[in-house]
Structures are given as structure tokens and as C-alpha cells.
Image (cartoon, rainbow, N blue to C red; front, side, top):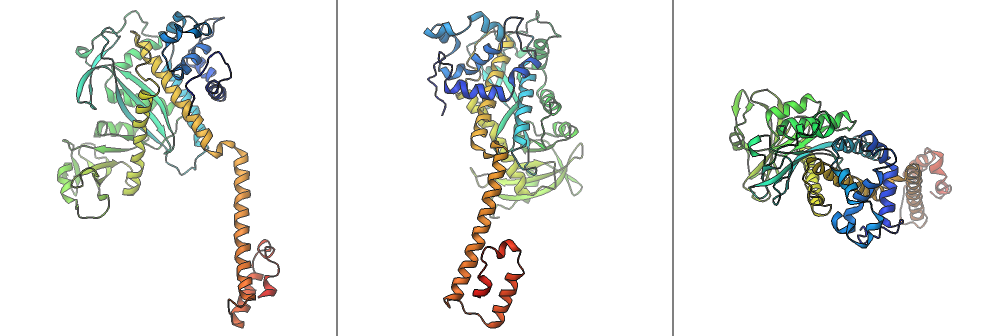
Length: 457
């Protein structure tokens, strides 16, 4: 656990040391520069970024910290707010570059056959008490089933089944102008990073999602498929992802979408009549079909609903060569993004740490939370994964493996020799001769384990 009672006056606190080490290893200062996150000559924003990064572990917000006894160790309030409200910073690019560097390191720690997936989902960032926040909109919250004031945080993540890394995000306002409570700031140059971010904020969600996937692939992030929930799993969006060279595994809902099976079109409810609930196990049925309009070959897997065993859920995969069990296993990794949203909101103050009125502060504060999560995942992986010891890991593994093999062979041969010597094991002369011939034919390193075995036999 990270000690939350940290004294910023002590430069050698545990959090500062761990995060400082991770920041140096990942060369975050260079990534900030590449993303145009830098100050004027003689004034570096690097220390400001580090301060805001560690602020959540102080168990207080910026206002309380600047009004505490520790205010002398910090910059002025205007310095932090200028940093958060700067429209020239490209925070989305920074997160992509940082994620690409971290995932590249994680790729070296996993087997080549391990499946790497991108996970796409969104979560509502509510701002119920706000009225004048730039691009604040009415958005529907599916969790509570109500429309609330806030933003829709569209997030793309990377997972290898063990770690989850956010690789891109879009703090989305409503695409309909009538649902926006406050307009965008017209004084922001449309050619700046802030102007481009405001333009992307009012895109349709499928268009914004494809843009996130393209940005991740162009940043060098490797993946084989995209995991999605029911909202994104529709025929047009699947076709767009396939065009990017990725497969799709998603959950389906019973809507008007049709599938071609044996020359006829069926919906999910009609295909569900083929399912037998008396079949043991959770995977009830699988079938290969084609989508109704664009004729995309897909595999549908009907899985028993554990909450109500008389019903089922349907998973779709564009890779028809996968087994039903493998499709279910891979889709299970989608849950990692739900855990990410929960941890970011509950522990890292996503959407609640800074309450500024500009859209730039909304984006920058989100990027800072994403950076915290990435660094924590980096430290967790470095602590728990022995392969991060690098070459020493492989040397130790080779020694241990050889020791285990030789010890097992020696014990086996000695046990057999003792049994023969004590007449606990009786052998005919013919079997004894074959046993001696087998031992003599073994490699020299095995004969060296028990040199007297042949004579004892």
C-alpha cells in the first residue's frame, strides 16, 4: 500500500522516490516536450506536473494544500491553473506516447503467443452542480438510467490479460448542440491543440472511437482485436474496425440486426431457438453466420446467463477460427476497463479533483489521472513480475530448471537401485539386461548422476 500521509518537505518520501524513479525510467520529461507541454524559458512546467501528479496522495485538493502550512513548498495558485488551462498542450498525444512506451516494455515480458487486446468503453463524468463549464452537456448515464449534466469519457485501453493501460481518451460533449448547456470558447484558436480537442469533443461516438483506435495504432501500440460492449457491437462499426486490420469480439443485444444462416435471414431471438438449455456447462451453442448487409463472416457464441440460467448472452467474434471457449476467455478481459473506471473515480479523483470552467482543465486533469494509473501499473508490474530483473531472471530460471531435472533423475535412479539392492523389486535376468542396456544408452550427463547404477543392477 502507498502511504498517503506524505510530507512534501521531505524529498525522500516513499511516493516521491517510487514515482520519481518511474518518471525517469519512462523519460516522461521528453514525452511532455514532444506533446508541447513545456513552459517558457527559465520556467519549467516539469515540476508543476510532478506536483499535480502526486497531489492525490496528499489526501487533499489543490485549494486545501495551498492554504495549509506546506504552501511554501509549492508554486503559486496561478501557476497551477495556467498549467491546467493551457490550450496549446496536447494531452491526448502525451497519453498515447506514454502508453506506447509502457506497453512496449510489457510486450517483452509476455510470451509471443499471448493475445493482446484493445478495450473500448465509455463512462459518464457527472458535473451536476456546474452550469458554466465549457461544453457541459446533458448525457445519459446507463448506470442509473437517468440523464445528467457532465461529459462522456470515451476511453481506449490496452490489456494483455494481466495489466491494463489506458492508451487514449476523448472527453466528449453531446454531438447535438441543443443538448449542450454551455458553448465552446470561441477565443481559442481552432488550429491549436485546444481547438482541435474541442472539435473532436462534439464528434459522433463511433467516429471518435475509430479515431482513438487509429491514434493508438499510429503510436505503435500493438493489438490483435478490440473488445466492446453491446453499444459498439453493430455491423457498420465492426466493418470500420476490420478496415483498420483488427478483429472484433463483442457482446450483442437483441435488436433489428439480421444474420444470414443457410441462405435465410434471422435475428438473435430466432437463432436463439436453436439453443438447448439442458446442455451442461456455460457455453450452450455456437454458430457461424454472416451479417445481413455487409456480409461479414462472424461466429456467434451463446453463453448461459449465470444470473438467470434460463436466459443467455451472445458474443460475436469476427475471427471464426477461434473456439467458443477462447472467445469467452478473451472477452473476459474487457472487465479490466470497468475496474479502471472504478479505481480512477474512487481512488484517483477522476472528474472530481479540479472543478475549473474551461474544457482544457477538464482534459488536462483527466490526463493526469490516466498518468497516475499508468505509473501505478508500471510499479505493480515491476514489483510482481520477476522478469523485470532482466537478464538475471533468465539466468536464475535456467539454473533452477537444470537443478530440478538433475535432482529428479538422481532420486529416481537411486530409488530404483535401492529397491533392487534390498530385493524390494524383483527382476528377471532378461529384464535386468534390458535395464542395463537402457542406462548405458543414456547421455553421459545422466550416467554421471548415478555411476554405480549399472553395476548395482
